[in-house]
Image (cartoon, rainbow, N blue to C red; front, side, top):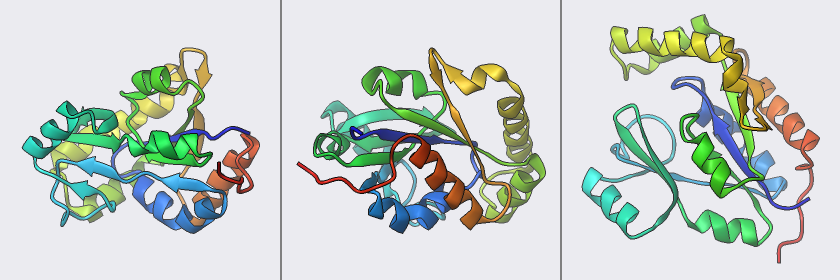
Length: 196
């Protein structure tokens, strides 16, 4: 199988960072690299192991074409550095923590992309959002409403002719990791390949 871009999406608080971190060793054994995002949020912020930059630095990086993909969400700028293209060309699949709103553009750039949407029970999501303490109660309510819409809208599960895979993360983290690995295996990502 050729290298694939694995595009993991999910509402804020769904546990994308936790699933990625817990799966990191297993992904490495499958020759799947995890892309590190560039975010206009302090590197000291609680959350993923991202590269925190100022809005000005992010804009400079964008102007200098340092990103393979970049988008705006939740008041922040997010970027995936263009070195993923080299890693894909060398035969490594690459997992990115992406945005559902950016998926159409990502598919234009990477037509063989494997889109995965992390789902989580709304009450579990409420507890996670409250525990991390990053949002106001009003913002939490908005995120919960969006989560409900995401799970009930059939249009969310397709983008053009591409079907989006669901990955539940409502229960234990290791269960979600095992479901992720099984999903990747169904798509032919189940053994490390020799790189070019």
